Length: 115
Length: 152
Image 1 (cartoon, chains in turn green, brown):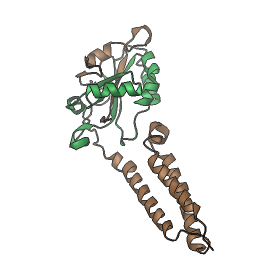
Image 2 (cartoon, helix red, strand yellow):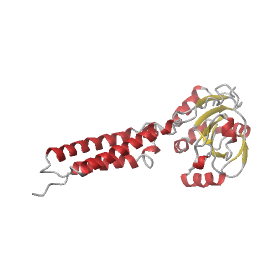
Image 3 (spheres, rainbow over the protein chains, first blue to last red):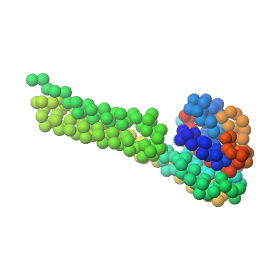
Image 4 (cartoon, rainbow over the protein chains, first blue to last red):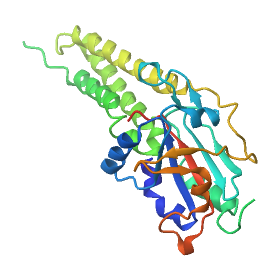
């Protein structure tokens, strides 16, 4: 989260939106974003419906046995096609902004209309 | 003659404690020390060496150095702490569902409609076709979806 904020300008310059998604309520996330200075888009999926639709449901892993998302990153082009996926094997290991930026450049997402 | 304090034992224990408490507030902030806890394991290593040397003094020269009682206690606490740390970070943290049913490269990303942090409802289609602020010429070339565990 923090490392992507630090590289936000790289993604903005390439026309790639950063969109973080979790089960947290919108107001909780807003306060957190204000506190930590996160300015990209954070979406709230409290019932984990979209998380389930993306095959990422981690059942019972939240407080009081609630369902949360397993961490994952998807790079989607402007036509809506998935171009790059990262499914980490450990909650401490996440995609790094540098590797996603490299994928954006290698897939030439920022220099074509995609597809 | 009063025996000397066995500072090596306490220094070793201190290294282990610092190694235990520093991951979340410090080393987890940087990918290099978060992805694999090198820094913490190094601190544990230094702590273990110091504890070992301290124990050597406590049991090798018991007339000169203290530590025959608290040496083993600090060492046992350290080993328990290191074990707990490694179990959590190298085993529990890896107990994730495989994501085998997640959409793959080349597939269409499932659409969605969700509220953002300002309460504004957005769809994936809108996110993909509206340029991010600060981009040159208002280009919209896609989006990176970052699913995270939440409960911050």
